[in-house]
Length: 157
Image (cartoon, rainbow, N blue to C red; front, side, top):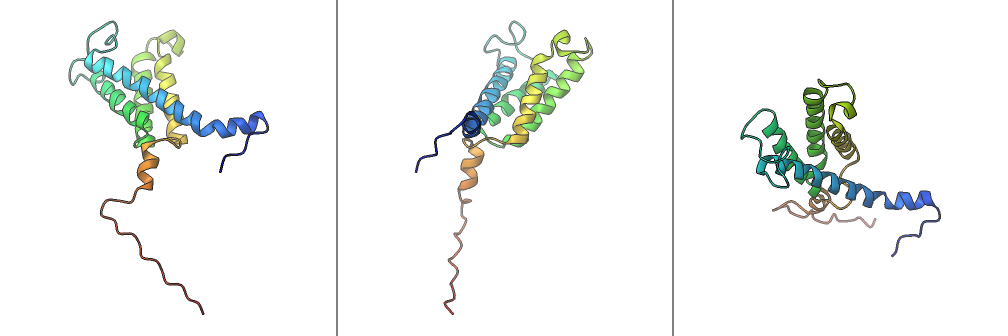
């Protein structure tokens, strides 16, 4: 059975909502994971013109680890709400501890990416993963070793 054809732009937008949410989650997760990979492994140009963050350095190495792992989890849609909330919080922390001390506004202090990631992940945490996510796939599977419930007899009286 096919889905009804939208009659107006509002219906078209509503019909597209699940796909747009999924695409948004994937793109935000991928970009965030790329930041983490750049900082941890020096790939994609590394951090600030090359190089990596020293192992265990606070807070840079830990932030990069959150970026890589959290970004991958959000990208895949696995533990999405929790991972997105952690990523959002890490970007709020980055903004207020690294950028805010230089100037009030993100445009002045170089914190635009931190603010955008913070709010994007907060939206993902609130809205969920969308229909195409590991969260949804895993929720449909019965647990390993789970026994299917027996059919209940019905009374005919």
